[in-house]
Structure formats: structure tokens, C-alpha cells
Amino acid sequence: MLVDAIKLHNNAPKVVKNACTTIGGIVYADDTGMCGQQLLADSSYIPTVLDAYKKHVGNKEVVEGMCELMLTLTESDELAAELASYPVVELLQQSIRDFPSIEDIVQKAEDAIETLNTVTGV
Image (cartoon, rainbow, N blue to C red; front, side):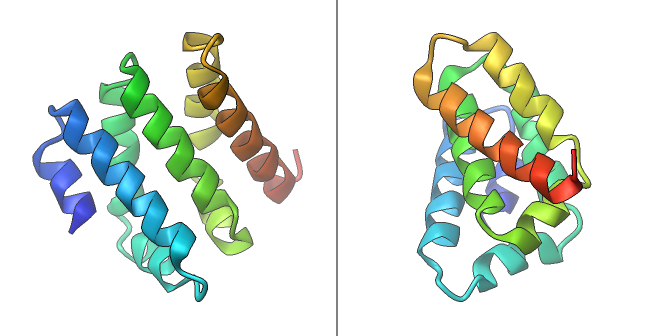
């Protein structure tokens, strides 16, 4: 449902940011890992989120929400392995370049990149 909100309102940065923050919170709070699995079950969900990320790459709040979501998803080895098949590292690196003075963005992006690189053996 939240990914559908991103899909329907991908021009609205507040909707994208809030949906990503909420998805991340739900995945984080779910000890069973089922929420993250469901997020990846539909092959269009991650591309939808990443497309919204690209659309709002200059918006600090959206980028921060996306970095938080990517970091949360990488906390599960299975989810990190799935994310590694998408250009997530490149987008996170771009976030670091675009917002080098925003510590929260840089730290979350670096941590997610490190995990994704470990999963892929880079």
C-alpha cells in the first residue's frame, strides 16, 4: 500500500519521504522479517522506490528517508542480497556526493554501501 502511494504520488516529495520512512520503520520493527520479504515479493516495488529516489535526488528530506530505508533493508542479509541486484550503491554514492555536509545522510549511505559491498564481495 505504501509503495502504491509512492507510485501514485511520485511527484510529491513529502509523500515519497513519509512512505519511505514508514516502510523503513515497519521493516525495522518486524522481528520476523516478513515485512521486508513482502516488500521484495513484488518485483516492481524496489524499482518504484528507486525511481522516486531518482526523481527527488536533490531533495534532502527525500534522500535522507531513502538512505534510512536502504540502511534498514540492508540489515537483513537476504534483503541486502536482493537489493544488491539494483543500482542502490550508485544512488547512495550520489547521495554522499550531493549532501557531503549532512552527517545523517552520509553515515546511513556509507553503512548501507558497506553492507551491500560485503554481500556482493566487493
